[in-house]
Length: 256
Image (cartoon, rainbow, N blue to C red; front, top):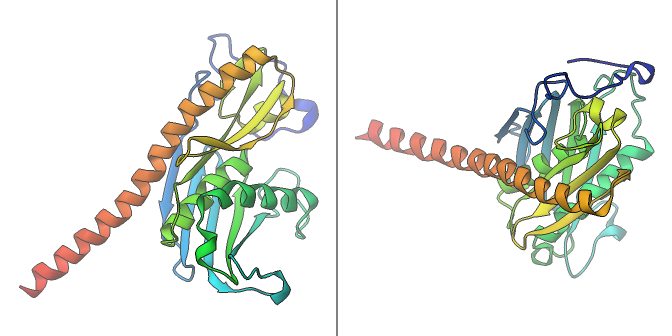
């Protein structure tokens, strides 16, 4: 992992051979690894390694709302608590949650609410606790992706999973899955999240410069990249239940 301070950002974000600084092609994702059911005290949990990002998500609920005045009589509520560990970034962050963490918590909740049947759980709350232990660009997107997986692991009824990633523009070229350096030193950063039950965008933010034709192209690239991430999410869940089924069959075989 390469750590740079602002004044040390490289002038060029592509190598002479046309590859990005980490060796990827323009449309290539960083390595992604996901696991579920890793925190036994949570109702659902998941872990993701996405490039140098390392993030845990834990889901609790449905449970009683505290304070009570926040509860809704006609549906449940979703509360997200996104936090970055003090050692997760180069400059040690303050332990107390900052404005950015509160903002990202709200963004993730807004991304996930459309896929939940909260009307089935009036007067209760679902709470998602996200802990970033290593950050290297795109943490809000990786956190949204892993939180969606943790909700599914909890067995909460969902219309679909949610997949998010950051795309953008560096050195005049459009790329998918921005790294930390590309996010900070590039010309454009566009986080996007997709809800698969209706194939719609539930998050779209933008910072930088990009014309309409570039925006149209990068949105198509983002959709194709998100499909690959979605497959990893689905396979991660499938592997859990295949493992459960295999264990049950072994136990039955032992009884015979």
